[in-house]
Image 1 (tube, rainbow, N blue to C red):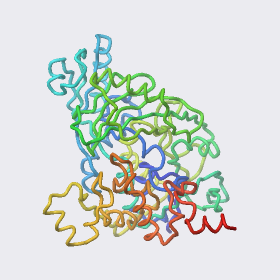
Image 2: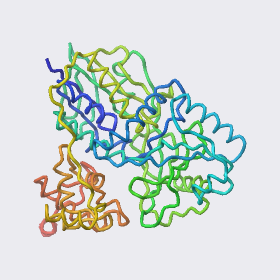
Image 3: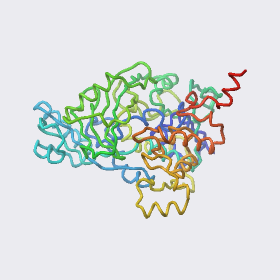
Image 4: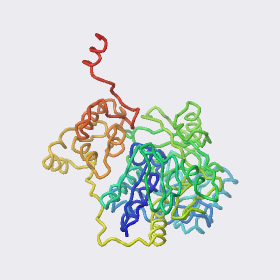
Length: 484
């Protein structure tokens, strides 16, 4: 008998779990409060696949970080997600830092991280000449990588969807209770009934967990602010550059991205409102000041945007993964902060197999392969572009000039199994609007294409969900209102 499974949360962990569970005979629903996949912490983080030396040995963070990082190269290849094993340097400026780095080295070895070693000043400056010359030593982690977190979540969601998983958005779960042998999840659109419930709810996990568990948890909302620099100029670093970590986290980093930009951040600010994703002058100035310790030649003149994300820090300091204590047929992946992105594939495999075994799920006879992803037009050779235009003339219509995104790519992003329904959804799937002008030129045409593909009036198209409409009516409607 097929069981109904409700996964609450469509971040990279929830999408990864839905993908694993879609191997089994089950009716899977993924519900998220946001308007799309990856609307929470997944869309706004450092995009680092951490090597695994920073997590305390013996913790779930350490276990799943290392296992997940090892999965990334093959998984990224399978799903068509960008991934680069760029390596990382953790910089030290005095003998106290050196001792910290030695401890990280030994901890990393205990966690199973390979290739770690301590570098001295000359080798650091040879590898990364723009590094602050006051540097004394560094921990080198060659297995540290870079990815696109939301692209990974989109790919996992698509793979789950082609294997039967259903995704519902703008659907916050406001209550959870046991009703006989079922779970009843309260939403604004009524109840979602399920035999099994899984919490992958990020910052909202504590409220739901504490409503059903005999063992309470406490989550602090920790905001991180970032600068993103233009990719038009040669970036100063090829490795991710860290400073020695503190009790608040890994500190401000200076890192390339898989798309060729440079990322500076994040801050670590404990806040009360999990929806407060504002950036502040003070926070961004703090990022710049900290990053200058790594990069004395720092300049934010080429900044194209700034943003912030909220990570869920559980008071115990570790991931909470497994069956929910005191709640039958309930499971969770809660307190998933850094290195959550790195750990997500391993968490999904572990928790998915646990649920399948505990709930007696049978494997399907056929698990359909991932949806193919074509090479982005802006990465093609001239010959490949000519062939792409021949296959589909809409590849000859460049909608986003900054990132060279075609009309065909935008329409394909909307038509995917879990497709874009907003301007931001298009931006994160295709990079239209991610460039220097931040959508100043392409947004009107993207809006028109969304309206055409979704079969909605253009006034219904939003930037990021209900309340984010760009247009409130037509000029004709406005004139009628004035004349009336």
